[in-house]
Length: 244
Image 1 (cartoon, rainbow, N blue to C red):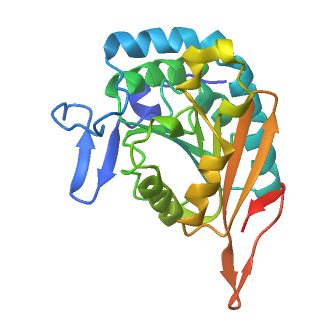
Image 2 (cartoon, rainbow, N blue to C red):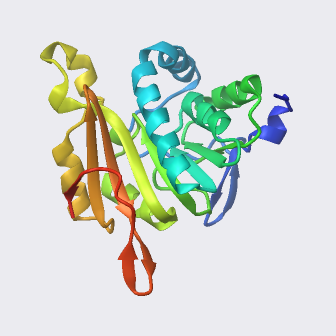
């Protein structure tokens, strides 16, 4: 596998309605009040922790997204809240025919992602500065988020943005399951989600249905957008729908 320069591999910019925002635009703040921020030191520490501490969640997410990709043959996939890009780069490596994008509001996280992409030698990955409300000006066949959704201050608004950028397909949200975490995991409970929350968000969204998969302490919520074909909605069922 060949290595190429970081500039050829990673685009550290995001397309906004007002133009291009580059990494040099440090005055632009994509975080909302109350959202956890990652500075240079925090991004470095998180990257070290994620390599081992998030391995079970990353393996679960990688398996599920790859399975969905092999089934649906997507052209573009978006990792929303990609952080240092550990999983994003692994996905791009597993799916060399797919263009994989990673978006994060922290330029420091994206610099970590740039280094990882170069080290792994993947050339089908693109990292862009953005957020759950500011997505690349593209459509995607699959959008997923790993341990990021719970950070978003305006989750309903984010779901609407995701819906707009899906060409028809799924938004796959991977989180820790708050209902299955033991009481002594109290530090992690603030970084977990309940199935009920996803159900409530579905009721106020444009998505056609919600599917949920629980695996131990891990939770996958799938918001499904069905394409219109001949005036009728069509989609492929891959999990158990709990809200329609």
